Amino acid sequence: MLKKLLTYVRGYRVAAVLSPIMMLIEVGTDVTTPFLMRLVVNEGVLQRDAAAVAHYGSLMILMAFIGFITGGTASYLGSRAGQGFGANLRQAMFRKIQMFSFANLDHFGTATLVTRLSTDAQRMAQTAEMTLRMAVRAPFMLILATVMALSINTELAFIFAVSVPILALALYAIVRFAFPKFSQLQDAVDRLNGVVNENLSAMRVVKGFVREDYEKKKFEKRNSKVRDISIRIFNVIVFSMPMMFLMMYATMVAILWFGGIKSMDGQMLAGDLIGFLTYITQIFISLTMLTMLLVNYVRAKASAVRCLEVIDTKIDLESPVDGITEVPSGDISFEHVSFRYAGMNEDSLKDVSIQIKEGQKVGIIGATGSSKTTLVMLLSRLYDPQEGVVKVGGIDVKDYDLRALREQVSVVLQKNRLFSGTVRENMQFGNETATDEEIWEALDIASAKEFISEKDGALDHEVEAGGGNFSGGQRQRLTIARALLKKPKILILDDAMSAVDMATERRLKQTLAAALKDVTVLTIAQRISSVQDSDLILVMDEGRIDGMGDHETLLKTNTIYREVFESQQQGIAS
Ligand SMILES: Nc1ncnc2c1ncn2[C@@H]1O[C@H](COP(=O)(O)OP(=O)(O)OP(=O)(O)O)[C@@H](O)[C@H]1O
Ligand SMILES: [Mg+2]
Image 1 (cartoon, rainbow, N blue to C red):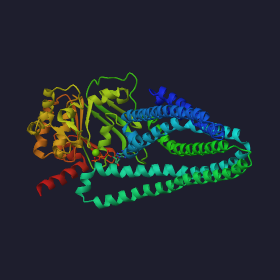
Image 2 (image 1 turned 120 degrees about the vertical axis):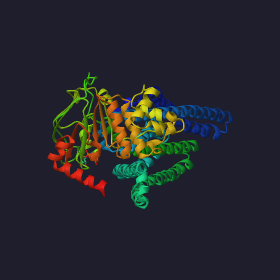
Image 3 (image 1 turned 180 degrees about the horizontal axis):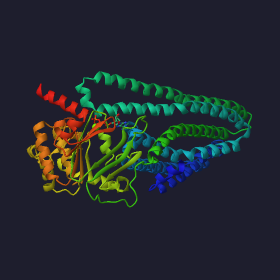
Image 4 (image 1 turned 45 degrees about the horizontal axis):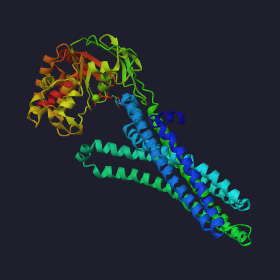
């Protein structure tokens, strides 16, 4: 895992290596200072030698200065490398997520991806920074300060030979307790983000159904869960600090006691005692740093696993090497296709076989949940079927270059969205090189020319995130125009006119049919009136094709079709 992570230090290697080196120099000055202090007292103060005080004193100041410079540089380089590492990691995750198939996205869910990209990556950056600052510094300081203390007086050193292991044991127990709690915390944060994400993206629905209170309660519940786990963890962790100080002061008192006796007996000089005490402080400081590092590693380990999980995800739907880039025709065929969503226990498509000729206008009808959307998603390879073959232009969709296929099979999905930016930018999302003229032409075909030209700035009119400043029907027509700009061989409209009034729908269908003579168009609709002029109509029922044919044939042969038709006729009559 570490090896994998190290690759993301790329571009910041020099800083990552220099920082600990600088830290080593700082440790050197840290450890030398008490030594000089001891000399100031023993050779200067006790001997009443002002020159010695000045000499060692100025050396102390020099050391402090070197420590200041190297320590500062080390911290700067450490943050640079640490944050750079974090940025690289985020970038890698984001790039990977862009390659995710729908199935990959289903597997993770949006909420956890957001947390992984933000909180987890940031924690990794902080840990890297901390490591660069402390991982070298703490152990070296611990060892050097211990050696120096021993060299001053071996007998006194026995005191901390007792206290340090006690402290270490206590700290270990604390960290040990916190270990499993951290991953619980992470999960709770994920769930919290889940509610926020869902709530914000469906705010209109929430308000429409006056569900604010319900949502508030849902949030409150998950929020307090995060709070409670956090409190439990940090209660224990904050305990480590007072514990540290208690042991440190106890040790110091013991040393002052035994050292004081020795000093009064003339066995030990005052400077030795002062130097010794300072080394003890350093030993405890380095132990604290090591604990903090350890605690951080525990948290970071959970984060690292979560980040790498994203980066290492196997994209289950990859573009073949040297895939075919040209879709030769708009023919479509499904040959005994069965498909099941991951984690479901029933097939969503069951042995589906269909033949569609280039240029045919096909309607798809069926109850909600009958897998209409699922069927068309296989065409642009948003999912791969487990059994059977889907062919476009007579070629298995798996043999096409994925980009090329999706460019030529244009889908207006049920849940399609507009993005923040101008109308022009939104249109060019389908085709970067589209000119204004082409955009107007597409808008015209999609019956969107009129209302766009009435907006301030027309093509320069700003679209809000999600397209909130357009009506549902306008948004649908814009997404149709966007799909047209791809100049596809196959156009799929999944419930793309549901919010458009009947008269506009009729006009839209006529202009589409005229403009898209050679294009195969698949229209999924709820109303039979939307598809009854089609060359071919597919009736779907629970993942199967229940009937195929034109309007007249189906009325005679297909019960579902006839019943739906009759119920909708009554709806209009009454
Ligand atoms: N991402 C998914 N993961 C798991 N199951 C799914 C997923 N998407 C759809 N399903 C299931 O597959 C079945 C078919 O769904 P699909 O969206 O294709 O229906 P549909 O005919 O388009 O319905 P509607 O008319 O409401 O749009 C449903 O039972 C649904 O629960
Ligand atoms: Mg659907």
